[in-house]
Every structure is written in C-alpha cells, then in structure tokens.
Image 1 (cartoon, rainbow, N blue to C red):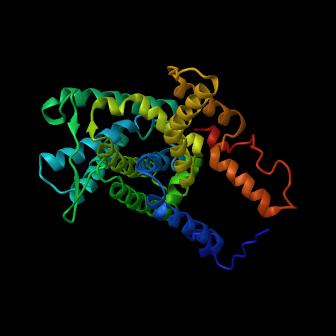
Image 2: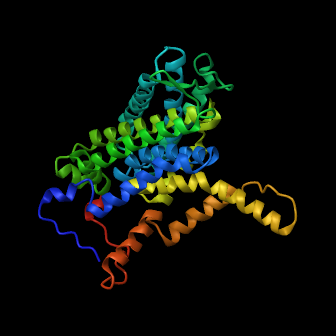
Image 3: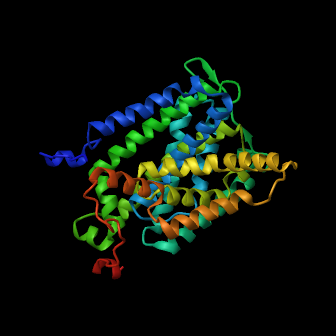
Length: 366
C-alpha cells in the first residue's frame, strides 16, 4: 500500500505523482531505447506506426477528452499535415526541420478556422460539422490536382537531417528514432498543458460551459484554442504518416480513419495520455494478431489460409461494444482500477468506481 503525503499545493500539479512513477517511466523509456537492438525491422516498423497513431490520438484527445468537443473529421487534418509537409519540401524546397513544424502550424490554423463558426455547436451537431469538413477536404484533394497530385497522390521525399538521409524502408531504425523523439516532445507538451491554466480551462469547459463562463473562462476562445492545438498535433502525425507510407493519396484519409481515431481513444481511455497509447496499440497490433491467429488456426486444421472479409472491422467493433458495456473508462480506466485495488489493499471497498447518476443543474441547462 502506497500513501502519497502532500505538503504543498504545488504537488497537485507535479509532473509525476511520486518517485516510483518516475522509475517506471524511466524503465519504459529504456525499453524503447533498446528496442531496435532486440527486434527486427518488421516489429520496429509496427511500433513506429503505433507511435504515429499515438501522436494522432493525443491530438484528438486534447479536443475530445480534455475540452469535451466531439470530432469526426480529424482525418482531414491528418491529410492537411501530410500534404503540407510534402508540398513545402518538394515545391518550396524547404528542409524537413522547417516543413515539419510548418505543416503542424498549417493544420492548426485550419482547425482554428473551423472552430470560429462552430464554437456554439455541441455534441452530435459539432460531430456532423467536422464530418462535413472531412468529406470536403477529401474532395478538395482530388480537385486540386496541380497541387496535390489528385487521385494519383504524391510521393514523400526522404527526410534529410543534418546531412543524413532517412528512409522508412531503407533505414527503419533511424525513422523510429525520429518518431520516438517527436512522440516524447508531444507527450511533454501535453503533460505540461494539463498542468497549465489553459488545461484547467479545457476541463472547466468540458464539465460545464456555464460554470466555466461564470468563473471568467472565455468559452469561445478556449474552444478555438483546443481546436488549434488538437489539429496542430494531428497535422504533425499526418506528416509522419506520409513519410511512413511513402505515398499519400486521398484514400489514406477517408471518413473511416476519422471514425477509427475516435474509437481508438474511446477504447484506450478518454481524457488521458495513456489512453491514446493503449488505443494505438489496439489499432496497430489487432490486425497483426488476427493474421497470426488465422494462420495458426489454418495450420492446426490442416487447411489453407482463408481471408475473411471484414474480420478486422468486426473484431474492432466487438471490442468497442464490449468496452462501452463493461468498461466505459477504456483500457486505462481498467488499469486504474486494478492499480488502485493493489495500492489500497486490503482497504479497497466495493463500488469505488461506480458511475454517478446525478448531474450538475448547470449541465442540464445547456
């Protein structure tokens, strides 16, 4: 049983809860550092893909999990980041160190432009508006053929850093290090955002807009800021996704990707950085697990490998339904319950995490 004894209010916003937590994260970072030495190129590529999805999940998490605004159109900002990065490199001749952050800024500016007319929308209406933007951007990519390559798409150039060329297929380890560095930077930014007054304003708007406004929070500006930060991080993920796939087309950023991103953070656990990573693990490694399972069953039965159409989608949907019914807090929520049980043992009481049925009166007035 661990007891955290706090002697200052500043400890409530510390980066870590206690030294043991620091040790666990240092151990996790050490494992990620030695991973290329222990595994092959295929697994490194899958882990790199997982990290890119985790960055995109953190971007969407800021909007949905922290500020409480639903979005079904974040694939559009993945596309904006991917195309902006490639166009700035190939058409403007900018190096990756310049084009990459600029791609995030362009995606963030697009998010702010979307937020200006939609700050008064809530729930399903906001989701429909963002969904319309996703469809519009997908069509604009095809229409703007001289700039985006249209249906044929564009080839992402090799990344050049300090005279060293990085290609995901030729040197997967180097690309892994780059993605890992960006992931750590985004995690550091996200964690400090939650500790800042802006992060507290996000939480206030999420819980009750009327109460937040009564406390002096500018709701419209806070929502626009959340959109800008969310789409900027998503744009960075899109830029990395373009280099990971090598070829970017409008088919890489369909509505299905937007829905998959939202389901990813719901399964992982809304409102937490860990949830973005847990959800990304499910999205990336579930198809591989199903593929290995199918081959194993085929080998045991003595028959050939049979591809079942829609198997991945059905499995993903079954996992989502299971979590909604039995664990609405997601994978990270289940881990919190298990950790709390062992931390409080033998003083853990039943129904500690039982969902409350009461709501704020201000919430019913929205």
